[in-house]
Image (cartoon, rainbow, N blue to C red; front, side, top):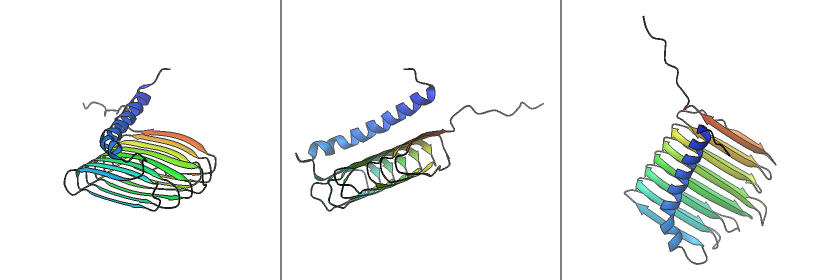
Length: 216
């Protein structure tokens, strides 16, 4: 299968963010108990803060932060064994995460750069079902807000650049969303899905720039 330049770029950046997450979270994963539950936090730098609240003893949280003045806040409520993996590298990044419901939710979050914000919540309403989200950001001053409600919803969001924004709300059952952004200052498309929807969107402003005509 042949890939165009944009596809290769998206794949490369997703791999970079995945590598960041795996690299930072590896010590946390190795230090976790055999039952893979509880909380493990690894922080390198100054002024980093991590707060985790768990209602179910089978819930799992792994947080790794590398840099200065990063903040991660995670609430895992409800009766399910929620799972969250959070990696932040850079300065003044903020991750506010909430997982709830009678069914399991799974999060993989990674952001690299400075002053990025992730505000993600998931609520799986059906026992025995799973809702999952994978979110990557690289660059500075980016923002992602994701809300998932209902059951069996999946989202993959990634953006690379500066000053970008994403909002995605999924409700109902069986929604699928993949939304990629590459560039800077991209507008927020604010996608909302309600039940059994599937969507893939790519937004970029990294194409060729036209120069003004030469002067006399």
